[in-house]
Image 1 (cartoon, rainbow, N blue to C red):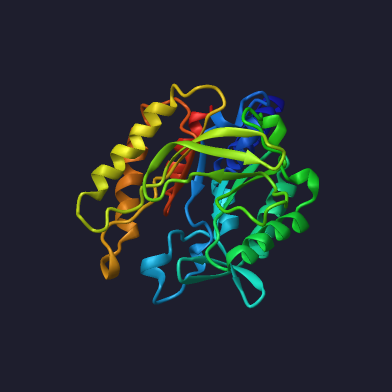
Image 2 (cartoon, one colour):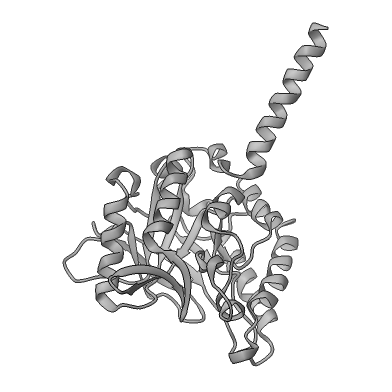
Length: 308
């Protein structure tokens, strides 16, 4: 009887651990502290705050069905937030589409998740959707006011998992008024609808790193996008496998076919996500940060498993 009882307790414990890991709320707890963040394979979402986009803009602007909280629970640790200054406040937009989510609200969701799961960390990229320099300055101010200093990671090229636990690293695609400090790092030279190996990530303290990025999001409806997109995704994955020490990588699986009223985000997501899932069954080297549209759970899990 005692043996049966012990076996039952063991099985229950294993199921409890499996259940916690299956939700991916704390998958980073298994990462060694000494691993460099730039070599961690991180599942991300492109235009992360678009779950709330409403009709008639959904077809053209919604790239996610999960809200930010559900994305975290699924394992997402890179969030692409695009604030727009509107009537004195910052709201999340995708192009002209209102996502019905405040920028502060989005940050508070991420903050609560970090507080609840101190083994974890995340990367947040900001990209202004409108409001000019005033909007960019307010973006930085909101971040500094909502996060205590200890939760904002100080950037350096070879920062480790230990440096990041319980923290958020901010990466900004816009830089604010000269003379003002910014949390995290600003990128200089982001590729417009293409890829580059010459992007610089620079902190307010002057620490810098090289970023390789691929963000080829459309061919303007020429019809060959899906194959050319896939070539760029796999090309950067292959190159990053032997990247020099301290190089960072953001490799977008996101994009869309067609143009105008024929814009189709889901078509690329369905095809590229399926190809990537199959590819990762045999590819085991680090792949950096991968922002996705409508990522299926099995693909998020496959990216996480590379780290194990």
